[in-house]
Image: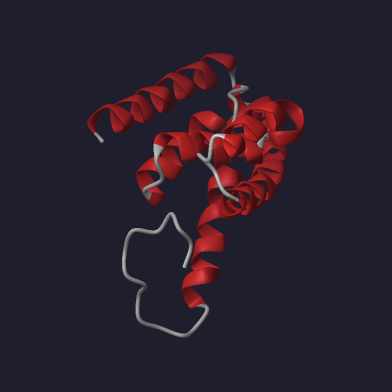
Length: 140
């Protein structure tokens, strides 16, 4: 069981829970990539709230995990500091890398979608998305 889980595993086949976790992490990465490709937002806008709200991570652990997912372009120095401070573990590194796989593919498809959308629709969709995220974080 991964450290960020705060619930009892569902009854079912052995390994089923781990597969579901991997699917969920890839889905977060893919969704972050889609929105990143569509709106130009950093994946952390999606990844951090998802890790906090859906997986019960602390804010610091979620930020560190997001930096791992975004490691090569922007996060290597931040990841090192979070790791040194004991706020993320080797497990967070693996989680971040799984999310990064979805982020990679999702960004491609998000850019394809956005390139076909009228600019005013894209701007309004982004505003709605940011409002929803803000409300979720505020009322958590």
